[in-house]
Length: 171
View (cartoon, rainbow, N blue to C red):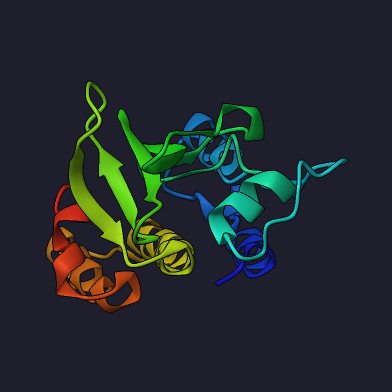
């Protein structure tokens, strides 16, 4: 998935207030606010060979929160010789490992990998769309925790296979 496809998919998934029949207005508005994604009036750069970085540079995803995943603003993206840091999974930094192109969850206190999240940037964006779809199925269609866990495991091929299971175990 590229940045434009991600934008289109997330925009199409953004729920409306009337979808939240069983939830408070405050929760509903907060959820909708967390789905904010819009093109920058002046893009920070186009990097189609790096879908996550292209997304951050061309679209304001700094308020977008898909479950526990968030993106940085373009000016907050950082890098060193091994990693490009682009967001967070809860309190842990997310990065692109330069040597492999894999998405990794980093230890926030040191430069060590907690787990590998996705085979590449495109797979990671595909996963986020699938995860948001799953979240909404659970919220709006009464999916049980067991059904959700089963469906979550079915997303492993999107990430790149069973080797990425550690990245979703705590979701």
